Length: 117
Image (cartoon, rainbow, N blue to C red; front, side, top):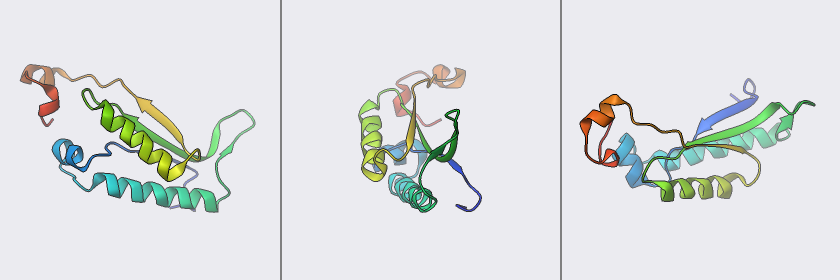
């Protein structure tokens, strides 16, 4: 895809295989996400690295999004460490903390971290 993609926007949800299994049923998520990010970074570097327009808009690069989940801040810190270890300063980060359980989640009661939605 590197011949048609200029800006990659990817998510990195979990560092912990156990948390990935619990919340998404995908124990291998951290390794798969890391491998995909490494491939994107390789393609970006082969294309000459990140590039901005004169106005500061990204013309070529990678943005890694991460949603901080309630009760899992330690995993979020581990995700950020993992992205740094893989990419250093060659990617931009979008750290989101706006998670709000919807009505169905609130109606289910109990600790929302222990439920699958």
